[in-house]
Figure 1 (cartoon, protein in one colour):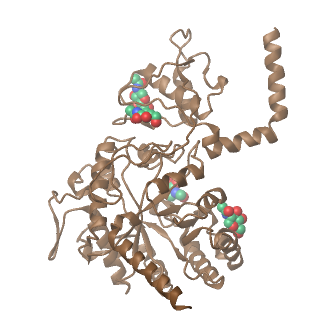
Figure 2 (figure 1 turned 30 degrees about the vertical axis):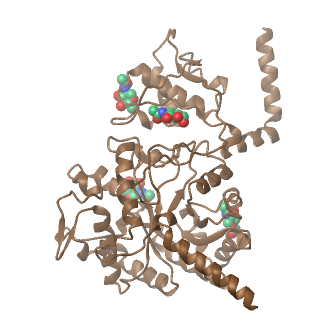
Figure 3 (figure 1 turned 135 degrees about the vertical axis):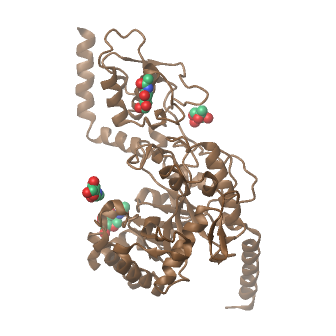
Length: 493
Ligand SMILES: *[C@@H]1O[C@H](CO)[C@@H](O)[C@H](O)[C@H]1NC(C)=O
Ligand SMILES: *[C@@H]1O[C@H](CO)[C@@H](O)[C@H](O)[C@H]1NC(C)=O
Ligand SMILES: *[C@@H]1O[C@H](CO)[C@@H](O)[C@H](O)[C@H]1NC(C)=O
Ligand SMILES: *[C@@H]1O[C@H](CO)[C@@H](O)[C@H](O)[C@H]1NC(C)=O
C-alpha cells in the first residue's frame, strides 16, 4: 500500500471514529420488519423510509428475495431468518448449505446486502409449542453456522431469537439473581449457549414489558416503564425499578449458571402496541419508547451489565393486519408506523428525547376515497351478525374490541366498520360491498376522532396486491373475460 493510500485510509479511520463517537448509540437501533399484511408496502418504499429515518439495521422473518433486492446497495445491516417450519429441513447439512447459498452467499458481494446475522427459527422453544421444535432447533443452528463458516462467511453469525419464557426464577425466590433456564430445556440451552459462545455469536431474546402488564392485572403499571417510579424489587444490593432490567438480568444469571455469564445478548424484539387493548395506546407506546431509547442512548446497561452498549431491535416497524390474534387483539398493532408507513406518535430514535414524528413512507398510492358502510335502507337485517362475522374473518376488526380505538359503537357502527375493512382488503371490488344488500359504498368518510375507517393502499404500493394483479394478468385473463361476458349478459337482460 502506498503512503498516500495509507494517509487516506488513516483519515478515513479518524472520520469513522469521530462519527462513531458523535453518533448516539440508539442510532444503531434495529427494526423488526414483518410482512404479515394483506397489503404489505413495497420493499423499495420501506427501504427509502428506513434511510429517511436513519435506521441502519433490520431484522427480517424470512429471506424474501424482493426484500433483499431492495436492501442491496444500502448500508443497512440485515438479519435474515429461517422460519420454524423449515427447521426440520435444516437438520440435514446439505439442506443448510443450500439455504446459505441461496439466501446468504448470493447477496454477499460488493454492493450486495450487508447480511450480518441469520435467525434460526423464531421463538422455537415457546412453552405453548409443546416442544415441537426442541429436537430440531439446535441441529439446525449448528448446520447453518457450520455452512456459513464453510462458505467463508464466518463473520455472519447464526443465532436463535428466543422468547423470555426460556428462563425464569423460582416462585420461592423471584429475583433476577436466581434466574435459570427452564427446567425442561436446561440441557438443550446449555448445549446451544456453548455453541453460540464458541462461534462468537450472540444470544437473542425478546423481552416484552407490555405482555407482563397485559397478562397480569396485579402487575404494577410503572414497573413496565423506565421512570424509576415503581416500588423496587430488591435483589441483595440491587434494586430493580423496571421489568426490562429485571428480565434481562434474570437471563444474565441463567447464562452465568451454565458457565457463560459474559455471552453477548441481543434484544431481538421489544416494543409496545397501540390498539386492541386498553393498555395498547399511542400515549403509552410513546412513554415506553421514550424511556427505553434514552437509556439505550446513554448506554446505561442493566445492574448486572452496567454501562454497556445494547444491540436492540424494536418490534416493530409496521402494523401487520393478518398476524395471528391468538396472543391478543393487540398483535396487529405493534408498528411504530401504521400499515401504510404513516407515523403514529412522536419518537426520537436517537434517544435524545426530542420526540417528533418519523419521516413517513413516500410514494404510497391509496385506493380511491370510497368506504363501505351499513345500508340504512336494508330491509332484512336478520343476517347482519352472520355477515359481520364473515367480514371480520377475512379482515381486521381488532379495533372494535374493549378498550380499543373503535370500541363502544352500536351494532350498526360495528357492521359498517367490518364491512369497510373487508371491502378495503378486497381492493374495493364492487362485489365486496354488498353483504346480502346490507352494505353500500359511500364517499363520505365514516371515521370519528378516535376511530379510523381505513382506505387500503393500492396495488402499485403493495407487494401482495401487485402479485395478485400479475396473477390475474397471467392466469386470470380468461376468467375476467367470462366475468365481463356475464356482466354484459345481466346488463342486456
Ligand atoms: C432459501 O433457500 C432455499 C434453498 O435451500 C430455497 O428453497 C428458498 O426458497 C430460499 N428462500 C428464499 C426466501 O429465497
Ligand atoms: C399444546 O398443548 C395444548 C394442551 O394440550 C394444546 O391446547 C395446544 O393446541 C398445543 N399446541 C401445539 C402448538 O401443539
Ligand atoms: C361491537 O363489536 C365488539 C367487538 O366484536 C363487541 O365487543 C361489541 O359488543 C359490539 N357491539 C355491539 C353493540 O354489537
Ligand atoms: C386515519 O388514517 C389517516 C390515513 O393514514 C391518518 O392520516 C389519520 O391520522 C388517521 N386517524 C386516526 C384517528 O388514527
